[in-house]
Length: 195
Image 1 (cartoon, helix red, strand yellow):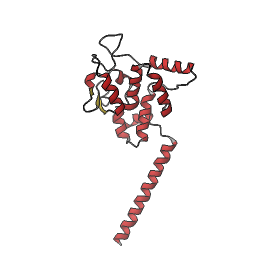
Image 2 (cartoon, helix red, strand yellow; image 1 turned 180 degrees about the horizontal axis):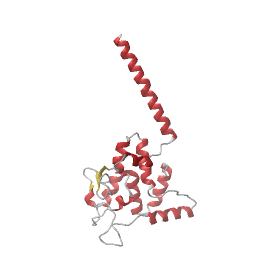
Image 3 (cartoon, helix red, strand yellow; image 1 turned 180 degrees about the vertical axis):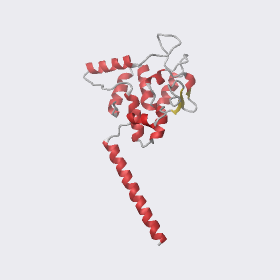
Image 4 (cartoon, one colour; image 1 turned 90 degrees about the vertical axis):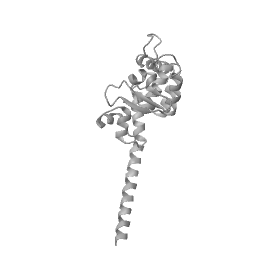
């Protein structure tokens, strides 16, 4: 598993612009935590632009079928994609009436082109989901909410997606220490008032 740095993300999306389907699927993965197959098979009926929500109707489990609030970037991307005639957000140009297939080949073309230019891209598409999960966890969102966003029915499944950095762990310990000191101070004040 790999978590992208912001600079890697920017470089990747700059290159992926040449392949709009790859770019937009990758964007939904890193912004919404979607699995690749969930993103490519989104139907227009799953998108509610007015309420800015995505319904993942094709999730493999009950927990995977979920409503997600859109980020602004996801909203702007989906608003553009809603204007096509197809019922799919990512319609196939090869198979009329169907959605695109897996994005791995398109991703591999981007990686190969980058390598020819001396730039190393060392992640697979699923790592965009790992990156989303790690960033959500580092933002301080509780693990149960993260599990719901990812479409996991078990908290145990979420742990493989979360990769705390040294800074995040340091910050957590500082928050912990501050909360303990505050609790002790409050307990002392309470006992002084009672005396």
